[in-house]
Structure formats: structure tokens, C-alpha cells
Length: 293
Image 1: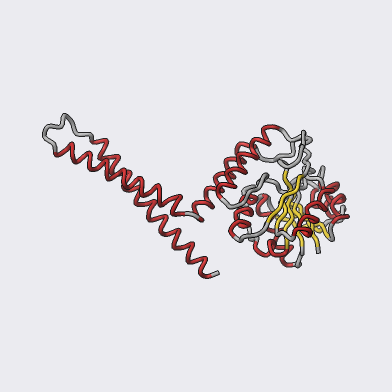
Image 2 (image 1 turned 120 degrees about the vertical axis):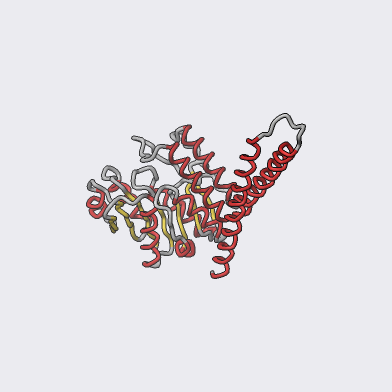
């Protein structure tokens, strides 16, 4: 069974059209109404979708998590996610499904960067490149549009996706899980409509949040590089400053004692020690978790 999944929050203006256009290409359309205060849920049901409602707004990631749970419980073979605000073109759903079936990959991402879409604002294109480059450097993936919510997942991918991020950073978390689990992936060009500016989050805050989330996952996956190496460098620099301070303090011919060196030495040694200990603990925990899987 192929299921189209739509996370939606106050999308009464677009949700009906999105559902009706998606229905011909899948067996079922599921909408997760994320605590909407308008008629999103009612209109979605009238359009032919099955609606799962959150009592209050929990965020994009929570809605996606609910949709993954539904697809797992209902043994979906392919799960296609698309936005309920009209950004994504439901007529391109077959493009994602066909690539998945033809090339036997686990995940297919609809990429705005692969199309010659003239409607894509330049600031969005630049933001996509910056965020995507950051994520690619943190994983072994080479995606061109890391923030696209237009995606298709195989049964294997659905079973592995247990989302913990509640906000927009869930898109990044999913990519990290794709990388960590060695899932195969492909991209297809898509067109996106930005009429009326459908974005619900400021691009700067969104980018900062996504990059912060990426760094968090990198720090967990590679604690020795993220914490350990800087910690060692800080510890060594603290020792060097400490030796310089003692040299000046014990030298009777020294014109003055640089107490700033002492303070810098103490701070560097303490911070370095904390980062080294943190890296060892995270590394040990990561290995323990891998060993229990």
C-alpha cells in the first residue's frame, strides 16, 4: 500500500486541493492535523483523507513522527510526504515513486536545486545551499536539497525512522538516520510554488536551528573529533600558559608577573579536561548502544 502523508497546521486554504490532487497516485492520503485552529481537519476529511489530530500544535517533527507511526502500523510499502500548504506539486508524486521502484532505493528526495525553477527566490536558494553543504559535511550523503519535505520512503526506511525532533530540524534528523543506517538514496527534480509565501518560519532562524541540530548530531556521532581534539588542544595551551606564568613568577629578574596567564591557564585546563571527559563518555555510550543493537 502506498500512502501520501501530509503534516498540516492551519492549512484550510490549500489542504483540500492538495489531497484531491494526491489521491489518484496513492492508495490512501493521511493528514496529521497538528493542532490547527481553523477548518483544516474538517476539510481534509471531506476531501477524502484520513485525519489524525494532535490536541495542540506540537511542531512539524511531531507530525511527521505520527505519520511514520501510522505507516509502520499499517504496513505501508511506500510513504510519500508532502506539505499541506500547496508548495509541493502532488502531480509529481509518481516521479518519486517511480524512481524508488526503478532503482530500488530506500529514500527519494524531491530536490528544488535540480530543477530550473525560476520561481525559487534567490535567498531561499542560497539558504538551501548553505544548510545542505553543512549537512553533507556532517554525513556521507551528497544531497542537493536537504530541507525538502517532499520525500518517498520504502518499507525498510519507514521501519527505521523514529523521529525525536519536534520542529523543522526533523528533516535533518532523518538525513542523519539515513546516513547512519546506510540507506540508499536518490533525488529527483521538483518544482515548488511560493505564492503567498507559504513559509511559517523565518529563514534565518530556520537555518540557525537546522545547523545547530546538525552540529548536535555530529558531536554525538564523532565525539572524539568534536570534543576530544579541541579539549586536548585547550589542555595543552593551558599547560603552556601555566608554565609561562611560573617561569615569570619564579624569575627574580622578571619585570612583572602576568596573572592573566594564570587565569587563562586555569580556565583552559578546566575546559579542556571537561571536553576530554565528555568525549570519552559519549564515545563509550555510542559504542555501548551500537553493541546492544
